[in-house]
Length: 152
Length: 160
Image 1 (cartoon, rainbow over the protein chains, first blue to last red):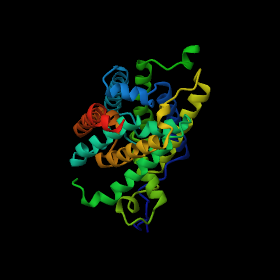
Image 2: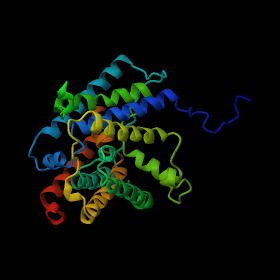
Image 3: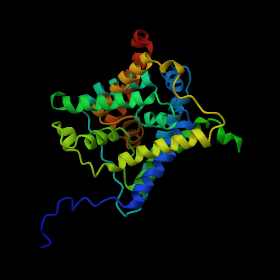
Image 4: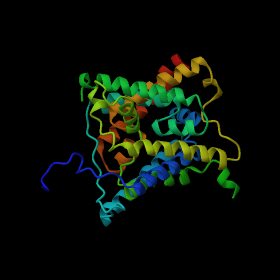
């Protein structure tokens, strides 16, 4: 009886607490994207023009803090609040890392937004960013269509 | 307290953005990343798509990515209206035109296609990936900047 296969039985639903946490961490990050000006086209443009170190410093500090956090999490065996071990699933190498990466970089330079800041720009009332989001969804759809034919 | 209404210094922002990674892991058991939300939206709009990328996507398992970006929209709105002395323009006025809309649409398409092909964006690869010493993420980040610099210094002259 207990052997009976239940679809999705091994994938427990996320708790309401976890969903609320995700919403709040999202709001925290959205506020930061605005207050740090990471979502500002001018800042992104100045970064790619190598005019100011501002964005590089923010990204560098963010990576350093995240790296230190992961070291601590691994060293101390920290678990998530629902008791599960925290484990990073490595993102593999394939041709898309290079090709897709460069195409994304080009889009970042043109629009002044990477995926997070697209949503932040919309939240901040920059309605033209809805075109960036629409474009991103079209790009995602193009990838969905072409995926079987692209080298991975 | 007026400092809070100004743009925050880079070191404050950098530290707080970096903390998103442990916050999301500890509170929800999730790896910080944003571009999967695009696939989630596609899969929810077309659950029976003939593209396996959408129809085979675990919609319930990734629902949190959508909740996360709704949070980003709300947080950005709150920061703009309640935490800013004067509303910050994030996009230059020049984008408010049909040509600007086309530019954003094309740039957005490059973002959507590129991040999904690369398997992540600035959050998933550059912050979470590098923080976990994942070398393909470091390579992806170098490529992000290579593409951005190429457009800004060369190809950009054709566009702007």
